[in-house]
Image 1 (spheres, helix red, strand yellow):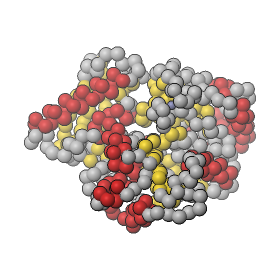
Image 2 (spheres, helix red, strand yellow):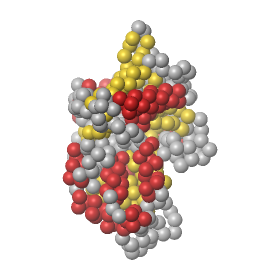
Image 3 (spheres, helix red, strand yellow):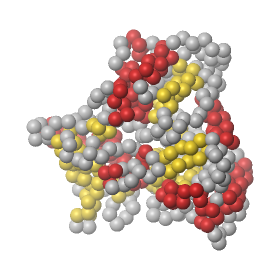
Image 4 (cartoon, helix red, strand yellow):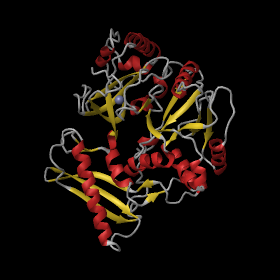
Amino acid sequence: MAELREDPTTELRVRLLQETLRQAVEHSPFYRNLYRGLSTTVEDLEGLAALPTIDKRMLAASGRDVQTDSSFPRRIGFTSGTDYDASRGGEQLLLRTFQSDEELVQFEALQQFFHDRRPERPGLVLVLISSFHGLPFTRPAPGVFSLPLGLPFHYAHARQLLLERHAFDGFGPRIEAMLGSVVQIKLLTTLLLREPESVLADLAIGSIYTRSWYLPRRWRKLLVETFGARVTSVYGLSEVAGSTMSECLSCGDFHPAPELVSEVLALDSDAPAPPGTVGELTLTSLVPFCSLQPKIRYRTGDLVQTMPRCDLVADARFRLLGRKRRGLYEAGTRRLLLDSHSVYDAIESLPDVALTPFPELEPFDVGRSFGRPRYRATTEEVGGRTAVVLDVETTYHPRFFPDRSRSVGDLLHERLQTAHARLPGNTSPLDDIRVNLHPAGALPKEVAELL
Ligand SMILES: [Zn+2]
């Protein structure tokens, strides 16, 4: 098994893994059944490889059987977002997650560690919370303001806190960091950009952390330019507590979190993906995380590419490439032709692309500033070869502006070729890319990419 992390905590992690497996087999009917006839005694982290992998569908189908305990949990959450795709006839796959007191205490300690940057007088932090994945559950750590951003008066609160000079013992006077989902950070930025320039100039934000979705390159640049801040993406799955990993300051990729055992597995088997190739991130949560609902060799559905070690961190390194389901593959093989992040980046930066506004942001009237770009990326098999088909809705009827449409089509073509060439194993250009531009409303209503 290709366990990604090598560090001095390995011994402790092996003990936690043994305890995780013991609890799962003893108390969870799902795991007892899954591991029937198999040995669950592991001497090292590699021992995990002898056990089968699981996925979200299996957990959702097994319901209560997965749980180790039927006591009332301290928190019930839901995972939903990125797997929901009504346009493909899919039903929303909701997985309920249950968390115990002990798990949440540990989770909060982790969060505190995350926010504690240990300077003399640390700056204050603004954390934008949402109820998207169930009720928010974190108690704010000292120095952290937790706010929702669902209504205009929430924005008024955030604005005031951001502009105010505070006077709390042990903390600097200003909010210097903020953390929120990609949509929340986009919203807050859009609203601040409407303010007089003096407001933006008066902010003291030095770091921005985004989570929940992919932060497209254009937005990253916009955030850096607007706030003069360092921008860091945070990866984490709501169903795997403790899976929080933030982008490395040195290499810009991710290194595995110590609270987990992370593996990268081949796309069509449980074998490890060879170094430098694309595989599926597979996580095992160690106790006390997920102790009510163990996640052991959980296939995340996220594509990653294993990368050479970086200069700063000795641990293994991987690059996120979006959802496995949304990747485009060569017919008959599992070679990744295009990853969903690259396709999204290619499209999202074009002002010609039609957007579906986020309905939940209606009270803010942000209009066309951002939304879900309306496109569909698929493959078609033609004479044994795979064609990439990109259907995109434009804000105008393509026939009204033929020259402009042609240049948008050419640009997308070029960007997809570049993205294709960046992926491992793609030695020749894509020979068949079809970019079709459509007037607004031509694609199914539910075409909406959440990454
Ligand atoms: Zn790094």
